[in-house]
Length: 277
Image (cartoon, helix red, strand yellow):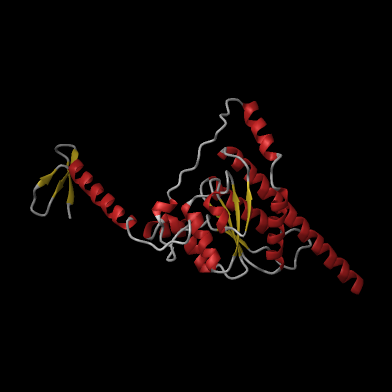
């Protein structure tokens, strides 16, 4: 272990060992990084028993399977007009029946008092928070006093996310939260443009092990996420920005459809109550 002392005389840091031998700080730092890289490599080389095409039983990341890069867009976009022309083409191919099936599942989760867990990375993390806000608050309109939509974004608790990432692995930040909460009949709603984010795949696997219904919102060809989902909506595009644009649109459509169902149900309950009185 090296003790760090700062030399005011020379204006830079030196590292002195227990035997007072002066060591070049850059060399010491390089050695430390090399040791860290070696330890990391040893961890990643640990054997694991994997489910077909996904991850292992004990939820340890399998880097050989999980390290997949997002493919690049095949059609270059060089102007605003070409961007929105591409956008319009993809919009025309949205799988509306799948969107409506997801909305139905979300509504049934509400009716049955089940919990919905939404998660993703980057822009998808923001959308997970956005969708949870819409479903949780936006469905609590006037006249809806019977119950509330039980939904939580797994991207919002930063202390918990960083604790799992630091002490275990970033690949497990969603899976471990799902293990805390998910029960049979709940819904795990994963959002991933590529469909290949390791922590999303592990989260879905944990949800399946808990008996939850799994939903995916993806892009490209669905990625490795698609076979882990009981129901998925895949935006048929290879452009990540357009995929993310339409993920927001799909989430707004889902929220609107669910809210309308809740409003209709609340109205029928009020009508029935008035008739009985």
